[in-house]
Image 1 (cartoon, helix red, strand yellow):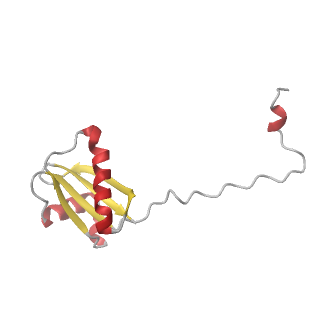
Image 2 (image 1 turned 60 degrees about the vertical axis):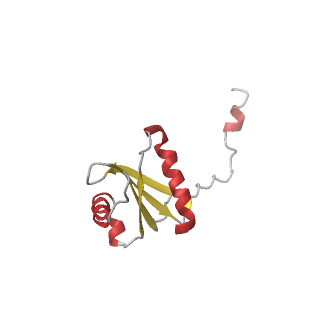
Length: 123
C-alpha cells in the first residue's frame, strides 16, 4: 500500500458522487448578424454576398440576418488572420449589439476567387 492509496479508496457506506452537470456553456448562440469580408478595394455587392452566403451559410438568407459588407485592401497574412477577424468582431460589436468574444468565422474564396471570410456575430 502506497502512502496516498488510502485517499483513493472509498469509504464503505459513503454516498456515491453525483454526476457532473452537463456543460451548457459550450452551446453557441445563433448568429444575429453576418459580416462578409473580401479582399479588395471595393465592398462586395449584393449578388456577391448572396452567392457566398448561399454556398457557405444559407441559414443567413433563410433567417434574413443583417449582412454587413466590408472589404480589406490588403488581406491578412496567415499568422494574423485570426487576430484580424477578432478585431473586426470587436469593431462591429457596438453597431450590432453583439459580444465580440462569441464571434466565430470561416474563411473561404469568394465567387471571383478572392480570399473572403464570413464572421458570425452572436449576442
